[in-house]
Image 1 (tube, rainbow over the protein chains, first blue to last red):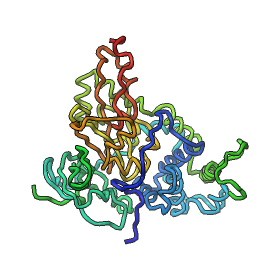
Image 2 (image 1 turned 90 degrees about the vertical axis):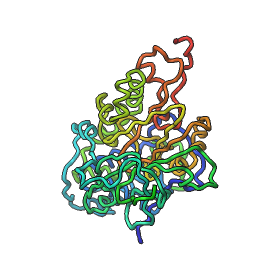
Image 3 (image 1 turned 60 degrees about the vertical axis):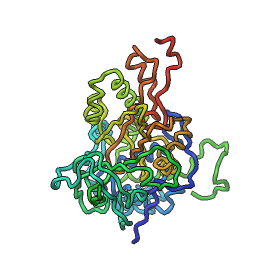
Amino acid sequence: MSYVTQADLGGLPGFGPVTPEPEGELFHAGWEPRALALTLAMGATGSWNIDASRAMRETLPDYRDLSYYQIWLAALEQLMLQRGQVFPDEIATGEMRHPAAPVARVLQAGNVPAVLAKGSSTERAAPGPARFAVGQAVRMHIGKVDHHTRLPGYVQGKRGTIEHVHGAHVFADANAQGLGEQPQWLYTVVLDEAELWGDAAPRQNLSVSVDAWESYLVEAAA
Amino acid sequence: MTGHDHSDDHSDDHSELGEMDLRVRALESVLTQKGYIDPAALDALIDTYQTRIGPRNGARVVARAWVDQTFHEWLMADATAAIASLGYTGRQGEHMVAVQNTNEQHHMVVCTLCSCYPWPVLGLPPTWYKSAPYRSRAVKDPRGVLADFGTALPETTRIRVWDSTAEVRYLVVPQRPAGTEGWSEDQLASLVSRDSMIGTRLADAPADARSAA
């Protein structure tokens, strides 16, 4: 077990109040929009997928000390270093000192609106019939896995109900590891607050849902 | 970057760039020299999210749903298509689901794992949405989070939190405020805040509802 995510925060105590901010406040430093744009532009080269980039971000050891765009930038550097697209001396100096590695494509300014408007759907042809149906009781998988996953810790082992069937989607766990898309059925599973947080937790009149791939789920008695 | 005595510079030297500025500039320079990026594309990306794609898009979706029952039904049945019909499509909004607030049920959206957010209708997420306090508490203490926003709901109102753990993105349709009968779609859109479409606030009440009515 060597994979450690720093990003799985649901239900953790001790982070204090939320600080709202005005709607027009998008960035808080001049470098932030450039970091955002660099990340999107390099993502558009097709050198990695979104799940691999999330895996890189969440495993940064100093994740919780970094601001959001610092996380993005640090992960971007690591993804490129891994692939020999840049080298430490180049990051340090801002000068190209090693030949460029080929990339599949380069995002040109004129294509930005079309590329953003198109996005990239994760829905795929179904691998077979869906195993679960709306209304069915399920239990979430228990236990840590040694790779990126989209099953948050706070729902592991908990019982919920299938509320929606979304079709088959690229399986993030596999895609993040470079194992291909391995699409699976995706479900919205709704869980009750007593199941999630126990009877001792203050009642909120609350239910919570997560979107879960089929392999996260096992049947539960109704 | 070396030779700085002060890590937190409130210096009067406005020409001096911070460490992060220099790091990003260096990286942009290398990536440009290597031919991986078109610098003009960076400008186009920034311009898009600063001036074209933001929560006013979502506000138009909500206002349309408030005045047009057919559109509302379409939005609830197939949000991706209904939203696309207004021209809002693409990155981080490929698979949209709309959820309707009522007196009985209030919806809130979070991504406890990162910062998943419906960019085409709400633009880039605010800092608080990406922060540890929001991501940790939204699923366990949503009423406490709502209080941080000055939002109080009756105990009888059931709260439903949607954790965006896959690529499905959620848009909260807030309740139409009372006193807005006869308002135009544009007027109504002005009452729809970004936060109300995440579910941390309600739509604004019309300050002058009596005079407008």
